[in-house]
Structures are given as structure tokens and as C-alpha cells.
Image 1 (tube, rainbow, N blue to C red):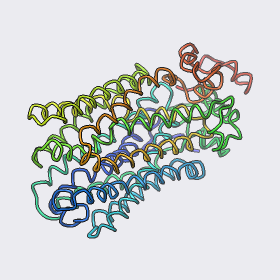
Image 2: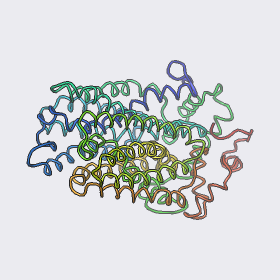
Image 3: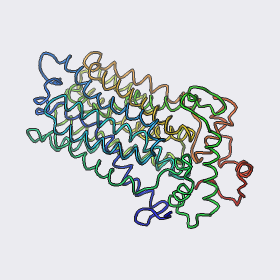
Image 4: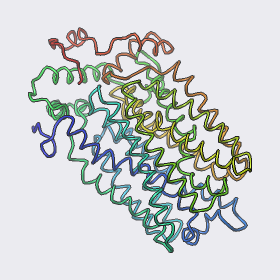
Length: 512
């Protein structure tokens, strides 16, 4: 079994290449396609090609708003089912195979979408793209967390949010770049550009090692040992660090042996229901605190609700998403320094304040109020990526036990897409009916974030995945778990490993 990765790289160098060739295109596709129609919905040729979703002019704007919401939401429906499918396919075929399938789906969907002349073809393309994005969003963070060391796992997975935000930003600037042109190129070309990222992903996925945790579960111990050697950059397959990490994975799998999907709805010693609810809550917060509203409908908010010109709206929208992308690096710096709880609380407080201020400003018709509203959209885009553009995916993969990691991640990600569907369906109608009052819904949800995180969410920073599993198991109760996590020393008790496996302790951590 080869102990060298692609191009002879191992360890951190291989991890960085995996980020560049797999994580980056996967989550750029996520952001690019999710925002893909937001800036195109008011393009003249788009409206001409798809008059059924014209909300700019005509007597049936309210009806067309509903149809527009349905069309945008078809992407989310596909993503929801794509994410749910991973609860089976992720453990059956492995992480790499599912990522490949997701890449192929996005490629096919993008081709259908950019060549559409009828609304039906556009909808089919959106559904297929969504199916692929759902698979990628549920599987790539799991693969990343399972192949990363404990010390840098936060940064490795948080880049998912950074690249997702980059996808939003690229789409917004590309949309602006084609805005001054005329004809179908104004919307077909921006959609077609995403094909390049799908091709990169498809060509690269099998260049990198499979998840060693999945390999252990399949009984392919030698392949798992080889994968760990390559991923950690070990020079000797019999090194103590290698054996300790492999043993930790086997023990965690042994402890959770027999766990099934229905066990997620029961508490028991492993507190699976509690852990599942943490994942569900985070993904609910990510959508219902307004992140998708601001990302997808930024251009419409500026143009239709704040009364700005089409060109100025696109400039401000692109600027807001660029600012959001730059702000996402704060999480990269802070996630492994201040912890998961801190970034969630900070982000939640900021989002709540911004949504309240945005509601107040948009309730006024003065020009100064419009400027203030634009300011709070930008400020909101500073706070949201700190905790909820990657941090939510990271935490969900960390708290799930090894046997149910893909299932728990896929179902919680499907929950993310479910609330995404609610947002994209309701937003066009809500903005045309209740207007500024709509923002108070998101403010109320964001208000709950710091409270629930403080009392319910244990810190996972610096611990390997098997140790986090043990932490939940040993905690005396649900409400005591956050406090228990603060007092429990980092590193899996070595005497436990010795007792279970007979591995002699030489002072190494289980996971570096």
C-alpha cells in the first residue's frame, strides 16, 4: 500500500492541496449556485425568456412572486433530497464516491440550466444542481473532519464557509460584469461559468485518501493505516502515533457498535438525541437568522425595497458579498483560538442587532434611512460568517459519533436545506406584503442563539473526534455537558486506551 499522496505530498501539504482541489470547488459551487439566480431575476433578457416569473412589471406581480419563489426553491428541494441520500450512500460507498456523484450532478444541472429556453428545463436543471450541492454540503465537511488532525480541524473545515462565501461573491461580480451587455449572454454566461468548478472537482476527488474512519468501519484496516500515514505525514507505519490514532478509531467504533438511525431519537448513554438536536438547532439558526435572505436576495433588497437603480443595486450587492467573504477569514483565525461557542455567541448577538436595525431603517422612506439600511446589510455580513458560514458544518461533524456521523450530518444538513426552502419560498411574498416587519422574524431567531449556545453547546476545540464522543458519554446530564467539557482535560485518557487495546503509552496524543 502506497504511503505517498498525490504528487508525493503527505501531511499538511496534502491537506492544503485537498482544500484547493476538492473543498474549494465544492463550496464555491455551493455559494455560486445558491446565489446564482438572485442577481439574474431582474435581467431584461431573463424576464423576456421566462415571463412566468417576471416580478418587475405587469399586472400579476404577486402571482409571479409566488412562482419565482417556487423556481428558486427547486434548487433547495434537490439539495434537501441530495443531503438526505447521504445518510445511506455516505456509509455504503464512501466519502469520495459521494463527492464524485455530487460533482457530476452539478455539471449536468448547470448544462441544462444555462441552455434553457423553457421554464420547465430551467427547473429540472435547478433540481439536479441542488441534488449535487446537497450531497457535497453533507459529505465534504465530514470527509474533511475525518481526515484532519485535532489541532487544525477547525481551520480545515471552516474554509468550507470561506469558499461558500467566495462563490456568492464571484457570482455577484460576474453578474455585474455582464449587466451592461444585451441578450441571452447576460444570464447564460454567468450560469455556465460554474461548469469549470464542477470539472475541477470531478477530476480531483480520487487523488486523495479515503476517510480512515470509514475504512476502519469497512474492516479495511491496512488501507486505513496507509491513509493515516499519508494524511499525518508519518515516516514509519508502525509509529506509536499512528497505532494510537488507529486504536482510538477502532475503540470509538466498538463503543458505538450497533447504533442505528432510530437511535438518534433516543437518549441513552451516548446522548444521541441531544447531539442530534444540537446539529438540528445549528442548521436551523444558520438559515432562520437571515443569512440566506441577505445572500440570495441582496440585489432585490437594494433595488425593489430600497428603491435604488439596477446598476447601483448590483454594485452594492457585489460589495456586500465581497465584504462578507473578507469577514469570513475572522472565523478562520478565531475558530481554533477562541473556540466554537465563542464564535457562535458573538455572531448571534451581532446578527440580532443588525436585523432589528434593518427593520427600523426600512420602515422609513427617507434617503438617509436607505443609506442606514445599506450600512446594516454590510454590518450583518460582517457578523454572519464569524459563526455561521462553516462553523455550523464543523460542529455537526464533531459532535456526531463515528457510526452515525454521515447520517447525522446528512439529516441535519437536510434540515438546513428545509429551512432554506422556507426562506426562498416565503421571502418574495413577505417582502411584497409585510415588508420591513419581515426582518423581525430573523431578529427573534438570532436572539435565541447566544442563550442556547451558552447553556446547551459544549466546547469541542482541540479534541479529537473519538475524545469528543467519550466526553458526551461520560457527561452526567445534558445540561451539565457544557460545564463538564470545560473541566475535562484535553486528550483521551491513555489508561482507557491501554486497558482496551494493550497499546503502551509513550507520551503521544491520539491525534496530531
